[in-house]
Image: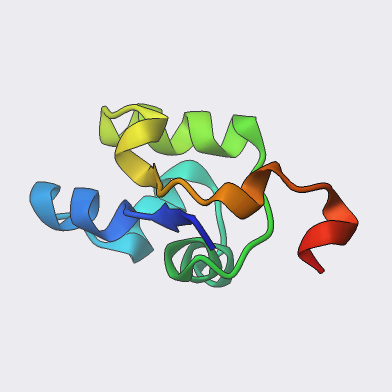
Amino acid sequence: MPVRVTFDAVLAKQGRTARDLAAEVGLSETQMSLFRSGKVKGIRFSTLARLCAALGCRPADLLDYEADPADLNGPDEND
């Protein structure tokens, strides 16, 4: 998948734990783990906003994108 979660780098840079951040923004540790591993299919903008507010960062600090020509295909062309 061309969208990668770079969340752990922000946590490490700030010396914070995912467990403490999850409690601060109101996520379960399971939800936080799934996001960190990139195993979620989506994230609500409100959740992303809470994470960014707590970390003092921007969404681009938590996610990265590598261009893939297949991203321009229709949904049934990728499956």
